[in-house]
Image (cartoon, rainbow over all chains, first blue to last red; front, side):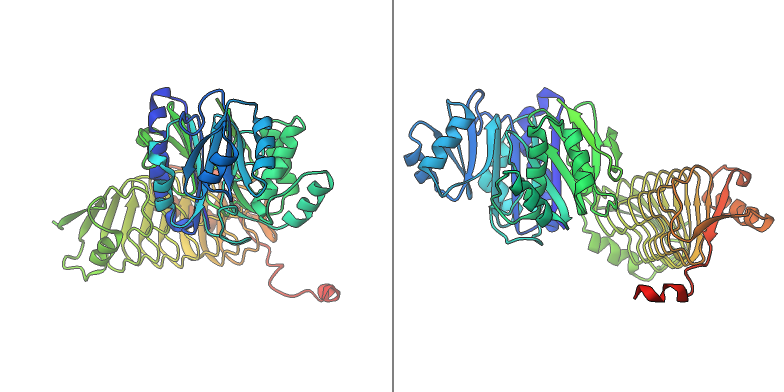
Length: 291
Length: 229
């Protein structure tokens, strides 16, 4: 199954409530994915202060990170360790590669952090301190693993480009073929997970100058399998479903926010839902909202 | 005057609600009002008596599934599989319905006033479904019996692998599925369509609709295909 929730705020006065709303949404999709969870949050001043490079890591303890990166601020969030520093993102990533060679980078950029872990999503949200998070955009995922092991690395979101984030409900059938093709073009992978291939594919095309809509159209052409995807960048929020559209998706939109979720009950927690425009995304149609 | 019972799903569980609805009816036409469904799954499932249930808000999956004899109205949208496997009775969705509305249903009337998503009436086995708006792709897929009426447009592959269900569409059909063809609208079809539209309380002219059905070419194995195996 897997559960997806996402919230893109248009009304700045709601930004202090981003984490509280995302926590409530995530709590409604626990049954869809009780084995692990992850979130990506955009604009939280504690996790990602303005103007600082932010890198989210797995496979290291906060103590190891603090020791290896004396100039960085370290924030612990369950299995994830977030570090931020006053330097370009590429420089911080290079320092981490040298000083923490066993760490896995699960997100990098400015104004953006990714938190992942295994276990019950409600408990994880507590460990992440999600209810206290603020910001303008957030994405969450609860995972019922099918294609790879239940590990923090296998949890969603997959974030492989600056500020980019992809969450997936479904399974890609031809991911091994596409992984081989991307590897031949020099793209490096962290896991054998099918959803990571989707994220790498999108990042690869964004890197080559495609906008998010174009990258997702290309994904529809190339990928076989079942997918409802929520893909975000620092300034956009996009939803796409495969041609069969068997994995559920609902979008709700008001003047104050755009939200997407696997099930209506996750949208019902949002303020103003009673007046929202609610619709199901059409198959193979790319929906993009820009900030 | 039948008693009206209100159940607030903010305070009661869906299981408690359904157990109460399953209890033998003490009144011949008991009425129920369900408040704050907030997208809950399996609301008013498995009803078997002539009760009337009004659900005030949006529901989740499988609302009014397996319905027999009851009349269930959702004053909002319905999630996946509303009225799936309905045997008899009537289910009305005032808003939109998600995919697989009326799936495998054997009888009764399902009315969706808004749009129905993909696979509306998949494997329908005798139910009548009347949709005020559009239906998504692969609607009436493998339909075996019953009638599907669409007052708006139909998505791709309408009636794919259809057996015997009859389909009436007023708007555009994006494409027909395998073995589904347009058929002549005869008087008997206009009569049954008028009855269905009346039962659904839709003010539509049967003359504006086209009929689709099975070409019955998939019933038998074609010996020409034997080399494919």
